Image (cartoon, rainbow, N blue to C red):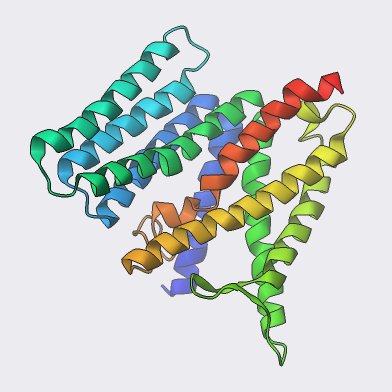
Length: 279
């Protein structure tokens, strides 16, 4: 089987699983996100060569953070939040007892795995609780942004003078033309989704304004998340973060665009939900 066919098949299955879980039931999505969150956190700690004990603490903390997001409407959610904070503190105190020789590095990696990986992935549950179509819109627009950036970036690269590179020291293939193409594609797609009623729950009488802002934020922060993960991989000298999907790399490779976009779009949607009716 060729690499292209393998990549296409695995990508199709991956997208199908996400869409099916989002549309089927909250707990189907929650279960999928729990698996992805734990795998992503563990993948990060394997890449930075964290000690086994820290990897276990990080995975348990990720599960508790997911629990806070999944059960935030339940009365015992504050207890889960306290348990998460307590376990996070214990994991950091463990460095004092074990004398690993690199406490600052391990503490930093622990916090990064929680703030930059577990938190963004878990916040998608808050977005789904507001409306599943908003979460699906986030995924759709991220895929549209990647397609638009690739198509426009590839076409402009064929010009005699080439295109204008954004960050050649981090991601040599990314260009300003590709960024603009991704934004334009996202704006068009967001307006189409708005016409289908995907933003109605937060837009009220400002459907297309909310859709435009949603599309712009998704495109910009998805690109920044991609660059952030590329910088991380370049700093440790690896091409892919793992082998999660054949032809696609690791978990972090597949969800890098989500890491900044998800929490920011979740905050944006909840803000619109509470503020828009007052305007």
